[in-house]
Amino acid sequence: MQVADSNSLDLQTEPDIVKARQLVRQFAQTCGFSLVDQTKVVTAASELARNTVKHGGGGVMTVDELRDGTRRGVRVKFEDQGPGIADMNLAMTDGWTSGGGLGLGLTGSKRLSNEFEIESSPGQGTRVVITRWK
Amino acid sequence: MIERIPILRIGKFLLITIQVDMHDQLAMTLQDDLTVAIEKTGARGVLLDISTLDVVDSFIGRMISNISAVSSLLSAQTVVVGMQPAVAITLVELGLELPGVHTALNAERGMAMLRRELPEDEVDASRRQ
Image (cartoon, rainbow over all chains, first blue to last red; front, side, top):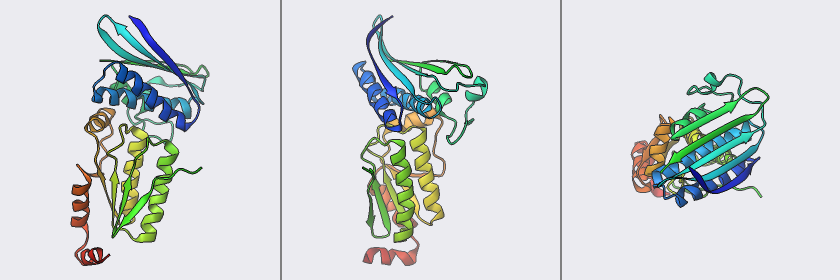
């Protein structure tokens, strides 16, 4: 599997979430995703970008265009140095929220992706990687 | 600069067309502006056109739910129109089915829905305006 193209974006403020959506959309279009697949990966990225800004205290998003044989895909990584997630099982429960939201961010973005990885521990920040294949 | 989404009055109804990729603050501002507009105009219905939105995530989805719920408490019914099929598919997979939110395929059908819901004695008043 190779990375054909890559770009990253600082996520600090709410308008950065909009920029994150636009960047992921651009990569999904380059990979020839259908409109539905574009919408799914962009929506997943929007949820995770919001988590980075609101719960992670800001961070960085990296988007990669993947090639695996003839298969093409988009991988999006979100990294922050925020407070981290103390109870991962709880965080991955539909409807559970640390405040304000609907509690669909993590679980929803997992459903919208083909691959989903999350690493976090209290005080160590959070790293989420999603991949969607064409 | 304070960005705002315009709210247009058409008779007894308010029309909102979202034409920008909304960031969170803009969504919150719209919610506040709409409640003020309903109170000021006594509007009985709100047509929320989201046909240009190519992404509705859980935050924007919640804003749409809230607008609908708050309007309803202020005695105005909201109809969300023009949702893109890809957005609908994604919302369901996300787990956000917007219960209680009335929808119509397009603005014309949405307006017809609002007119039907209008109490009889207000229909004439609406036509006069």
